[in-house]
Length: 381
Image (tube, rainbow, N blue to C red; front, side, top):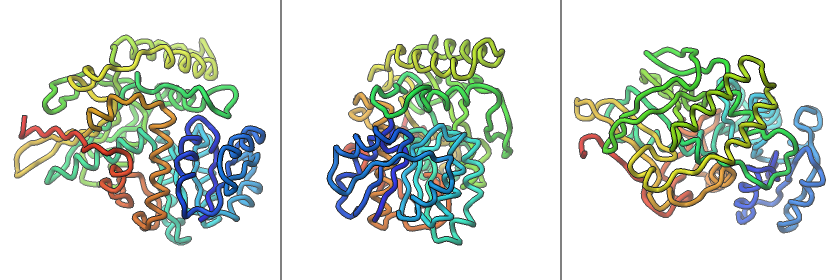
């Protein structure tokens, strides 16, 4: 199989590139980046199956010419609110299977609408297979599978854990920080009372985590909020929430949002400031993650044997204590998606979010961790 790794030498993409270099049933990998010299230099770290090229993804003709010589696209080119939809459209047109780490809800909504086109071209497309979204979706699916009926799904993550990578081919404003700023400003979409609704980001909510009590969290503009009800129409509520090991972290981010919304600083200045802040924020201790909200989790509420129940699923204590960087925890899941495709464990055609039925969560987590997931059930606490 021939793989096109768009952004494959970037802060996220380099980790998926490293992971797939060990897959024997890949005959060719093209590392494509706007910065041609960096793409070539990075590709030289691998065997002769790897080559590096310069590619501007907004040049549709060149993009599709390159795609036409590949079987699958791994897309880590952000920010996705700028590039996600156009790249997926081209991949489907060129009959390339497709995986990405899209973390913006706006393009995700449009990308899911391409399901019929993907079916027509016999293509599998998984959007948002990173950390959040990605791992969080599959943790949420595991939680839902514990219940007889699910009414509410919350996916959550810790902003203190989102550290930008030092090594990347990207110059200028960090795409992940542009994404973050995009999703704390303006309006975001959530699902409440069986309806999609626009709301202000960073609205405070209370989360009851089974066995750990009540905690403050803040609504964030991530795709999970809209993808779960897309795939599960019986849901009444779906939100994505962030939290900080220190409450002050959230208030600093709120001040940054206010400055951008009031146009006191530019969007690019805000994204640069956010990157600086992310590097300064301390990571949560393992004790904080065990007693409070974990760095990433899925929480389902509904019915079990006709009684109100809730289930939360997170990674094991051993995994939570690992100092995963943002690039590793985002890039590796993308590579695992490709591995499952190569092994024919992903074989459904269409466009899916990670929880949409194309990925067996047990297959995925067997690649991510050697430790069992941590499951907290309300009826056991």
